[in-house]
Amino acid sequence: MLLEVRDLRVVFRRRGRPDAVAVDGVSFDVPAGQVVGLVGESGSGRSALVMAVMRLLPRRGVRVEGQVLLDGVDLLTLGDAEMRERRGRDLSMVLLRPRSGLNPMIPLGPQLTGALRRHRGMARAPAREAAVELLDRVGIADPRGGLAAYPHQLSVSARSRALIAVAAAGGPRLLVADEPTAALDVTTQAQILTLLRELVRETGAALLMTTHDLGVVAGTCETVNVLYGGRIVERAQRHRLFGTPRHPYTHGLLGAIPRLDGPPAPALATISGSGRDRLPWARSCAFAPRCSRALPVCSEVSPAVDTSGGRLLRCHNPVPASAE
Ligand SMILES: Nc1ncnc2c1ncn2[C@@H]1O[C@H](COP(=O)(O)OP(=O)(O)OP(=O)(O)O)[C@@H](O)[C@H]1O
Ligand SMILES: [Mg+2]
Image (cartoon, helix red, strand yellow):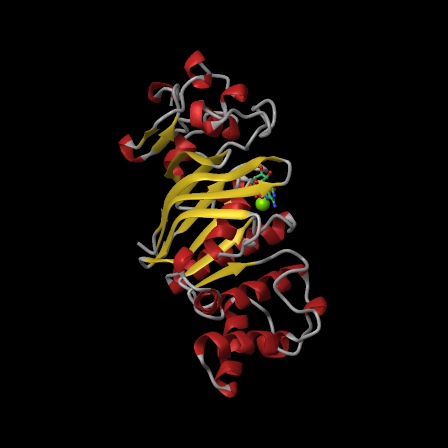
């Protein structure tokens, strides 16, 4: 297994207030060559989770526990220098926000060749050729000319593609993206998701991707983890999750019971309340206050994890399989 996250916890210490548990014992795998999604609404812990995987959380005021095994090596135990070396080379973050990932003062070429020389130990001339190849691969129309372009001279789509090229330059086995397409218009979003999927297929790298948007997951991810209040409440292969959502939260996100052979139903806002109304996982189901299927037990006992039938489910009263 390429990436194994085991019992990961991320706790923010807050002055004068109780600690905030952003990630509360999360375990999942990312196989090589696959796209794995982490879906959840705002505050569910997506960013905290991927930043912990990348080891990009600040030391001060944050406690990270558990294991992040990349090819069996626990990244959480590495020294800072080794982690810096691995970041970009073994695992890399795709940053598509407008002001991230690219230095506005430096043309694309040097930014790409810098990454290629640093992570792949290439000499200047081969790095330049590899940079042209990379820009070509991510669909930049004039890759050789693109080397001289400054980031602000590029269209949003071209800049996003360039950012993906930067993330891929070191030849990482794992790409990590937090809400990669949130800042993009719908057309660019579709192009960029297609590109990411192609990149995964061509390079055999894996992609771990977060989103709040089930529509993004529908066309992109093989396996989907649904995150609520810092825990995974349901996990299944994409088709099963869309075809037969069992957790009331997943069911609500999907809005309606979709047909297995049809396109996924659009996500409708059928869940009342907000992520802030939640109970402590330690002695209840965090989702109970908003759940249409809640029973008394849901606010008294923490639901155990059920992994039967090729699906992970954390629910006292799941949507019955017969109603699927
Ligand atoms: N620096 C911080 N200090 C205190 N608590 C934090 C901090 N960062 C995040 N949290 C808490 O951790 C929880 C998860 O935050 P996270 O940023 O991972 O959410 P998210 O799923 O990425 O959502 P969004 O991106 O919409 O904010 C939130 O409830 C938040 O209150
Ligand atoms: Mg976030």
